Amino acid sequence: MPIVAPSLLSANFLNLQQDCEMLNESRADWFHLDVMDGRFVPNISFGFPIIEHVRKATKKICDVHLMIEEPEKYAEAFKKAGADILTVHYEACPHLHRNLQQIKSLGMRAGVALNPHTPVNFLSDILGDIDLVCLMSVNPGFGGQQFIPHTIDKIRALRHMIKDRNLPTLIEIDGGITLQNAAAIVHAGADVLVAGNTVFKSDDPVKTIEALKAL
Ligand code: DX5
Ligand code: ZN
Image 1 (spheres, rainbow, N blue to C red):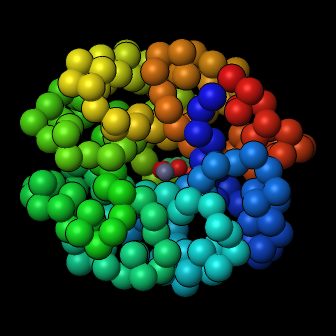
Image 2 (tube, protein in one colour; image 1 turned 45 degrees about the vertical axis):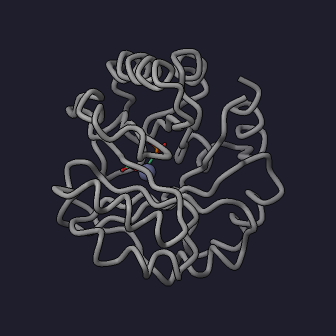
């Protein structure tokens, strides 16, 4: 059964409490929180105040996806705001090993996200230090984009690397997940499904989460 992590980027920001309560009562496992800086990605989303409020509104795991440059400057503040998992981008981290050690020393699980063009084998020498690999199945920056089919090959290849070394690393897929393509994604080896529009723009978000869990 996959871990389901609805992305609050597609939630109603004028009524976030209601959406948090809906997720609390649903079978969603994690809250996925997308932070964008307008530099690493061509969009700006939200930061600490929203995460702090979401943290107070749920006991579920807060999975914070940083699409920002120099994440090391803010890791401690994200911990304070309530992050349980902190994911940084491979492409934004020339000192990735140091970044991961910092995140773990602050008491969070450490994730690494890969843009669609970044090969999974670039993680070969650091996989043992990563709690979660987030494979971007769209170009990061916006919700509601189309799933890039090549991601399926990347999931399979990464699953192989993780299995080969008997690691507990989780594979998370982020972007363009629908009720139509989710089964193939899980079948290829994904552990965590992030879903924004598919959950929040559906007529019945609780049922949609249920359907993703049932895969
Ligand atoms: C994109 C974000 C995603 C996004 C997913 O940059 O990282 O988490 O919110 O949204 P959907 O599921 O609508 O593609
Ligand atoms: Zn995300």
